[in-house]
Image 1 (tube, rainbow, N blue to C red):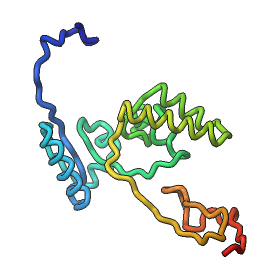
Image 2 (image 1 turned 135 degrees about the vertical axis):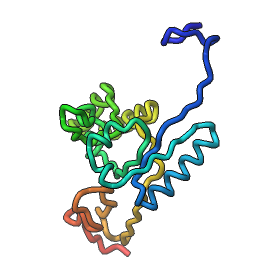
Image 3 (image 1 turned 30 degrees about the vertical axis):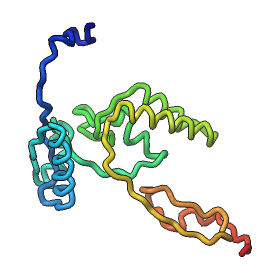
Image 4 (image 1 turned 180 degrees about the vertical axis):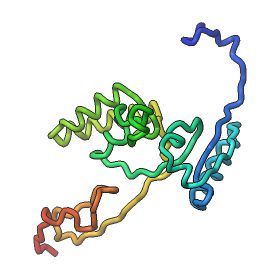
Length: 188
């Protein structure tokens, strides 16, 4: 049986997977996260070269976007923010002076198509179905590996109708972000 790359499975060579992993050297939380992840990868045979740098070097767009290894990024994605994070046009490139939010450099025509449809949908069920399709594509192609998910708990009295959790990462959001939609029913 021939593989798509032109070599047969009988000729497969075993090579060790190895890559550099970079975080800001002065950021203790990132260094601890890096050590934990690198430790897990070593257990499955992946070699990691620790390549930590100064914050100044990480803030240089070209250096950051042309780094050939693994790095960490923080994001609190919302449905509204998906296009900025994952659209092909948002990949930082030399011709855009390395500006763009898609730092994973994921360029997927299917993701772009789904993001267009999500942005132009006014039907909640249709939007939810499209987000589910996007999530499946993301998990199949895995352009980034989410390590943890932030949880935010919001409590509201049962008589307060319309109060719901805010969009995580929404600019200027607060616990009462949608208070114009609240209604006090007076039920106990």
